[in-house]
Image 1 (spheres, rainbow over the protein chains, first blue to last red):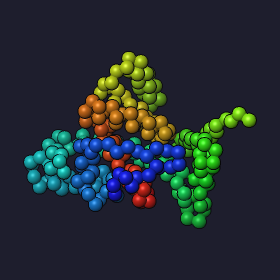
Image 2 (image 1 turned 135 degrees about the horizontal axis):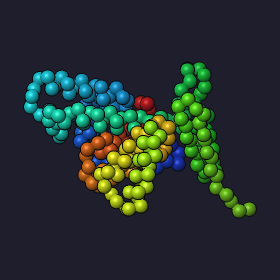
Image 3 (image 1 turned 135 degrees about the vertical axis):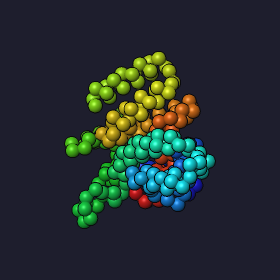
Image 4 (image 1 turned 180 degrees about the vertical axis):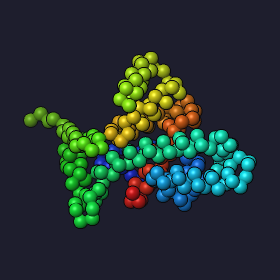
Length: 151
Length: 85
């Protein structure tokens, strides 16, 4: 998938900028077709298993794409990877809730269209913004901001 | 936890007032991000992006901030677009 194919994450949102591949990114990229592993926390576990198997076969630095990890550098890199994945995971939940048909309810209970329609009405229909803040186990707060027009 | 976050927020304010771009600021930003998880995903994203941008400017590869760039700007978006979430 080329960067040109990326689209905004939701109406009113700017598309994410692509940054340079970095060391951890190269670790991810090394897995190539296993990119799905990167989208969830299980990804780091799979990478850990992959590196673990290589570690047991050789005492030389581990070559992952363009990145060499020496003994003692692997665990910190994986810890950082895990922390980065946790942050990204939290952000993705927010991104998803405005998507059509996204729902956390069981199949058949809810269409997942409510927030998507609400977002469209507020942002596309009225040029406003729809912001959500929530905490686990507590109610969510949705803040709708609408532009004022002088009549 | 709240005390830690308050201390980090106070330190970030001080660094912002001083206009300093340091690796400490990257670590402070990430510390706040992790303290916020998953309570405020919008601020989390903004601060995570700021931490990543600063880490790149400083070539500061220690810690998770540098690695966030790939997730924030690449794979996450790609999978979003592929409907794979």
